[in-house]
Length: 450
Image (tube, rainbow, N blue to C red; front, side, top):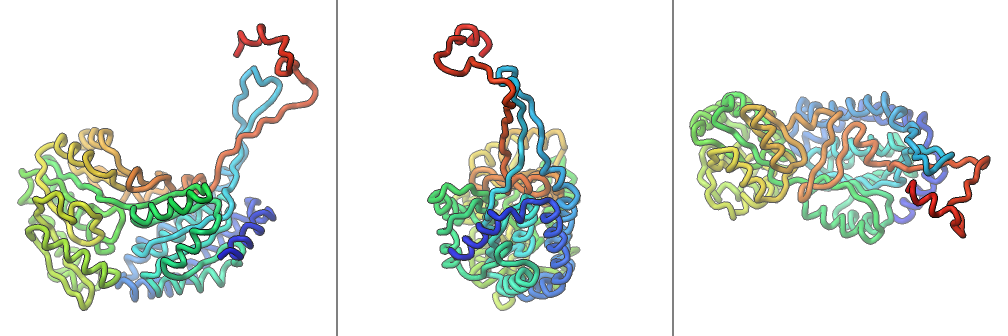
């Protein structure tokens, strides 16, 4: 690990990554590699998570192609030196800001979207002019191995290197002195990463998770709400960091919503979702046991079926009264959705504000009232009358706050995540005003202007 990081530092110090032409060439190479390895990666996703080709393309590859194309068009513009104003007291100097890449980056990705969440931050690292060490999750071994082959064939290790292994490898990597660490995972592991980064005062970007609330008001379009919530909760079998985690449901629309939700799940996955080819499985037995265990912590409204042999859990609505139960304290990360009675926006705001800050917030109802709830609460991102889709707009920042993370990325924000603005003051030599030098005989006069 030490030699790997040293070699990458030496390559970065050579200045090879700084020209915009090099960065754009590497972005094009990454796009070509993804195209060439798309089919093997889709096959690996099917083996590891039973993810269909259609869902793999939509949730993993399409976002990456769009992101790369945006950086190819814009990275030259984002990288340009910018002139800024200079106050009269600094005459005759002039000022500018330049974007400087952080240097050698460590990118640690999770298992739930193992291609997208590894490559998406890498796009920002390449665009900014960094080198990168990549660490995929061991919980999707086929994807991890295929990615290792892809990056090994496409890039020199002194520029971009992928390292496979378990948490011991993570620990060894975190002991090294990187210039920036980008981590996507749970808040618990985020704390581990931040403690390790503190040893070297390394800046971190943490994309974590949390319990993202979903509010359905009395004046919501119930059919649309049920369809979009069912889709957002069932996507990747709920193994999505921004999936709706619990539902604050107005009693006036409760029965209509439940019937509409059941109808939409049948529309998506048929009478038995656990046997549907488009329904993703839990990643492993441990995840299955954890999520299926939540079902006993409330009363089943619909769903509840589990098949440990295939690691599938039926989309489930769950009546929950005990707010201290693990299902209401831990991020579910599966297709189980607790339902809680909520009679007003005020109740929803109080409930959400009394808990850790989530990565996303979803509101179904009038847009104006939804914006008021968004303003009065804190979350990484938000949707009004939709779920998940805010992540698709590469022109908006994506990131958490508090327990759900720090920093943001996507589009220009990815470029800025892996670089820093550096102020440069240039002072000509043809004029050297004496007021700043001792014995400060001009001080009484200068004091009036400071």
